[in-house]
Length: 138
Image (cartoon, rainbow, N blue to C red):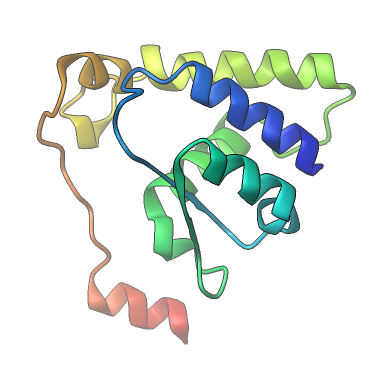
């Protein structure tokens, strides 16, 4: 991933924010593109608080990692895509379906868009139980 493309994506996300007056935390792994001073400088200039995983541990930001997994494996974005135009089209389609058409159990069978428009509604939090965590670390 090129840093310049990540900056472009961040610019787009900032332009499309609904709550522009609220603080924003940008959580990422330690990918070189996110550690690049050009990227972190742009983010901080735009008021973002930067947060990164300590050891590239996906459990440090489980919600974002879950969305990334869904986009990659359920919407086919993990495979090699022929060109940027097609990749953008596939990503737009996946995000639209994920946010607007697919109800989520953790959101009481509402879509993310419905919950976002209604404000702070309670949601279910699924925490990994200790036994499952032990099995994963063996």
